[in-house]
Image 1 (cartoon, rainbow, N blue to C red):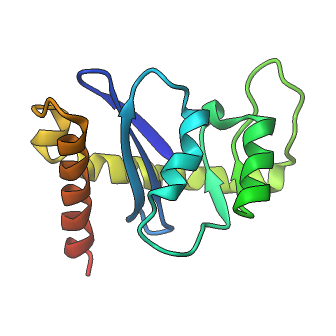
Image 2 (image 1 turned 180 degrees about the vertical axis):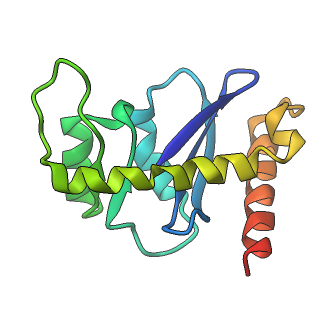
Length: 143
C-alpha cells in the first residue's frame, strides 16, 4: 500500500503485488487521510483475489482499519506503530515491512511518465485514465 502527492491537490494510492507490479491504483483528492482511502483502493483492484497482507507505513496504523480489513476482506494490515502508541504487533509481521521498497519502486516507475508528474488534466477522470494507462504500460513491459 502506498501513496504519493502530486500537483493540484492529487494523491495517488496504489497496491502492488510481491513483484512491485500494480494491482490497484486510484487518484484521489489530497485532503482525506490515507486510512480512509484503503478500502476504496482495494475496490479498484484489477484482479479478483484480495491480498492476504497489506504493508503500509505509520499512516496506516489504525485499529479501525485493521478490523475493517480483517472483517470485510480477510486481509492483515502490517504497519509499524506510531509514536506514543502501545505496540499492537509483535516483531514477526513487521519483518515484512522491509519489502515496502517494492511499492516505492512502483511509484518510481509511474512517475517516469511526465503526464503523471505534472498533472496537465483538469478533470480527475482524465487523470485517472492516464494513471491506468501508465499501469498498463508497466505491466506490458514486465510480460
